[in-house]
Image 1: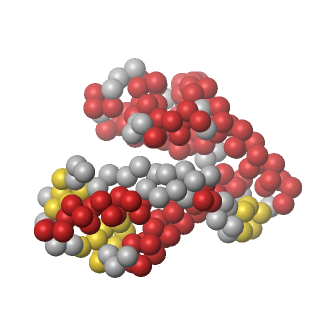
Image 2: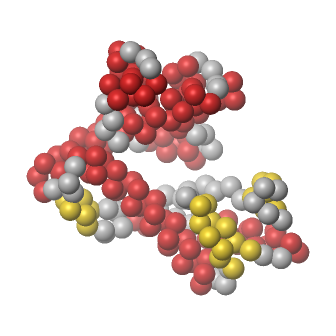
Image 3: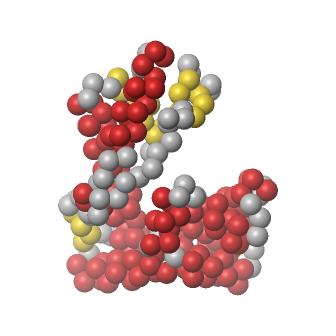
Length: 197
């Protein structure tokens, strides 16, 4: 979806954009419940969740949930085409091949929607871990799509620059897309601040 990719490249969050589109409020002005609703609409719409399911979870009418999903689809029409392609592949083969070449036999249409996205996200993280390991980084753990490393404070800026170079490399399997990253550093998990390069 070109608009979503452009927004992402500009550092915009799809959830924040849709939060504003749905509720006409900036993200920081939304309470936790409305933020959760915006995320549910984005993920749910493009992973095949029904308006009825969203309505039940958040105590709104089905027509309200349908309207939210319509706003999402109108903003990102390329994702609707993706859903159609995935449904067609599911109906014809019951298999899915990810951009990284992984093949999965599918049981449900939801797997057809979800697998290429989640599998590719995992492969981007895993290939990044391999690259960081090869470059001698002291890898500690991963938390979802975050990678935690350990380094001396005196080396922080050099380490951060090299990490950024590796992590923002073009991904050939995803049309050489480069994922922008944020770096944070601190003495422990609770005292981290963004690193400005």
